[in-house]
Length: 163
Image 1 (spheres, rainbow, N blue to C red):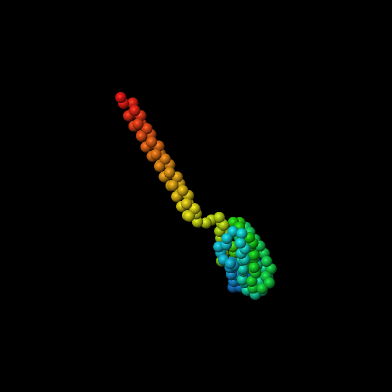
Image 2 (image 1 turned 135 degrees about the horizontal axis):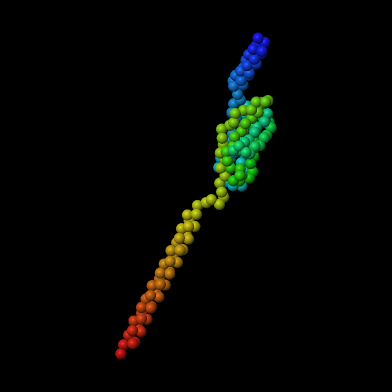
C-alpha cells in the first residue's frame, strides 16, 4: 500500500504544480520600434521592450536565429540597432524573465529596411525615351534626304543620257 500512496502523492504534487504554473503564466511583453517599422538603409533604429516590474532579463530573438540579451534596469529595455542593413531587417520577438520563469513571446514586430537606391526612375526613363525618339527621327530625316538625293541624281543622269 505504501508504493501506491507514494505514487498518488507524487502524481498529486505534479498535477498541482502544473495547474499552479498555468495560472501564473507571465503576461506578454510589448515591443515597439522607434522611429518606426520602415527604416532607410544605414539609419539607426531602437527596439523598445516593455514588461512588468521585476523583470530580470529581456531577450530579443530575430527569426529564431539571432539572439541578444539585456539586463532589465526597469520596466523597459532598449535594443539599439545602428546602422540598419538588409541583415537586420526581419521579424523580432522579445521575452523577459522573472526569477526562473520566462514570459510568453511578444507579438512579432516586422522591421523593413528600404534600399537607398530604390527611387522613381520615371523622369529619367522619359528623358532617355525622348532622346531615342529624337535620334530615330533624325535618322529617318537623313534616310529620306539620301533617298531624295539619290532619286534626283538618277533623274538627272537619265536625262543626260538621252540624245
